Length: 271
Image (cartoon, rainbow, N blue to C red; front, top):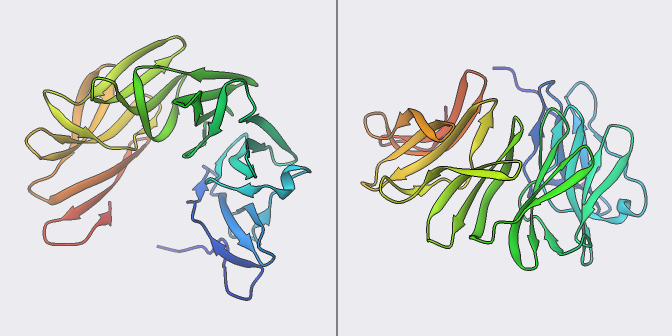
């Protein structure tokens, strides 16, 4: 396997550190990442290894804001959260200019983040936030902001995922359940829930087209990776036991499935 260096950080170089936020990559191999520069400021960079990664130019006043999330890159641009003082804002860079999409001065919205944002091939954006102290998930499609505010949900986990025209989110509800929800317009349905069959659902879910995947722990303690379509379990992708002692996160892309797992008597690895 050939490795490509996208960028390097060093104690005396122009880039001092990466993270703590993870990078993202698009279908063309462009990588978006957050880095701290020698002057202590943070910025979002994009590169594919063919030439030095470049910082995305951000116009005032947001050029003085800190990057406070991973940058999510897609065909329509790169999105991330930025913050200065108490002001939090969701920024999108279309390759030429940066635009503020929404901030915590939006009526009732008192926080943006902490995890996300995400974007899809059509340029839609999903993000987590807080509305009057409650956890909410928002979407931005064609410049229109919609907030999904279900008062029966007490906590959100992982990243909100855009799938086709729906929104997927992992949450806990007032009944004490962990649930995987699909939201489409004003309708929602539970795809997975803890209770009779499952003791827990992984914090992060994945989707590609009509493939939706999540990790679960059954009530008997066994772990499995599931693929869900609609409100019915279509198949078990993998079960812990014969080959793996533990299964972790899962990512689906086309016909491929990528996952973390610990083989019997061995260390955690990616498959």
